Amino acid sequence: MRRIRRIHFVGIGGAGMSGIADVLLTLGYEISGSDLHSNAATAHLQHCGAAIYQGHAADHIAGCDAVVTSSAITADNPEVVAARAARIPVVPRAEMLAELMR
Image (cartoon, rainbow, N blue to C red):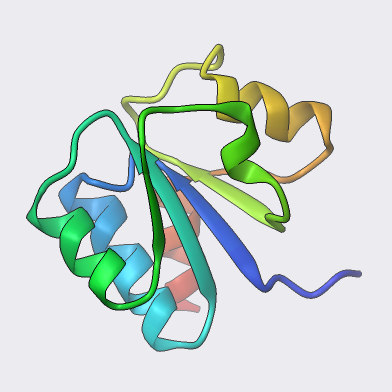
């Protein structure tokens, strides 16, 4: 089993997603994420070392070990499609939160 090192968040600007990403950054994970718009949460994460992209594109997931999606993200999102094609695990936000609580 491969070790999870880099996690990409699709819809990282939301309150739930940015909070989880922030905790994972603190735990030493490499975090990247994308959202349609920048906001205070994405600025904070970027300041803390996350790679933040505005907009969604398949190449944003390069090198990721897992992709986390918010409930607002549809199955045809280019990052989700690319992750599935590359056999990168796509994990719903709620599942990632549950994993953090274990």
